[in-house]
Structure formats: C-alpha cells, structure tokens
Image (cartoon, rainbow, N blue to C red; front, side, top):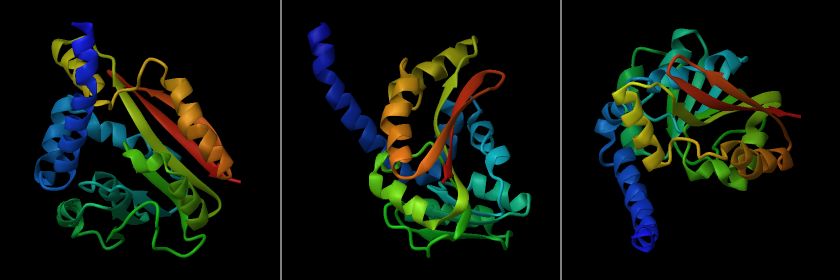
Length: 223
C-alpha cells in the first residue's frame, strides 16, 4: 500500500500543477472563490499582511492575480504596477481596478521585467509559483529596485484553527502544497533565502501570527 501511494505521488503533483495552471488561466474566473474556500475566508487577510512592510509609494506587484493587493495599494494612495503572466487574470484585475487611476497592469514575466533600472521602491509577491526560485527573477528584481528598496515575499500561510472547517482547509492546503512543510524554516533559508542573499539582498524572516493562521514573510533589502 505504501509503495502504491509513493508511486502515485508524482501523478498527484502533476495533476495539481495542471489544475493550478487551469485555475490561473482558463478558470481564472473561479480563482477568488476557490481561494476563499480553501483558506476559509482568510486569503484576503493573508495578502494584506504585506502592507506594513511596503514603505515606499512606487510599488511593483509580481503575480497580481485578481487584483486584491493592487486595490489595497490604490486605496491607500500608492502608485502601483501589477505584472502577471496570465491574460485572464489581467482582465479580471482590470475590472476591479478601473476606478483607480494610480494602478496599471502589465502582462509579463518575473524573469524579464519590462522596466528600467531602479524604477521601484518596493516589489511584492504573494503566494508565488516556481518563478520565485529562479535566479533570473532575483536578478531582475534587484535590477529594477531602487537603492535600499524592498522585495517582500509571502511564500506560505498555515491554518492553525481547531474547527472542523479550519482542519479541513489545513488539510487541503497541505495537499495542494500551499501550506509550509514541517521543515519550512530550513527550506525557506536554503532554497529562497540563500539564493536571494547571493543576488545581493539582506534577508529578514517574519512569521506573523493571526487569529486562526500564521503567515511567513521574507523582507529582502537591496544592499
């Protein structure tokens, strides 16, 4: 039985990657609903944990998704740009942001940022996909950040409430890989922290405790 389970894991991971690809592109219209269900309504709160660490007023968000953080930034008066590889996400976010004149959205990739050097005071990415581990992303982010600019990353959230729905959501998060693994501290440091330091950042790790969840945040200062 264990051998069968082990053999099935690569297929499970492949299916989940395929599902997330659909969710982010063809099924983008359902993204907010799925995020709300699997997070028991905490997704918006998790994204908002980045706001106290965004110190400047010229912000780039990599992977803007359906535009919630872009809306938060616009509401507090920041000038922001959202970049995403999904055209479908861009359309949804545009509808959310059409009344905010200080937000603009661009279709593109983190590994090839279409901006001049030293453009942004802050760059933020919440629950990013594999591009966040790519050295090309780190190099590009470093290039377009101003001196002493900040790269703020939310890689993980963890549901810690004890209700049935919260336990179910925690299980779903573990299943989909959105929850941190047991050794997530060492994984963050080895696979994200060390490469970012090699790219020229000073990395600080924050673990924010909320009422029924916790959020991991990396604050990367351009040295």
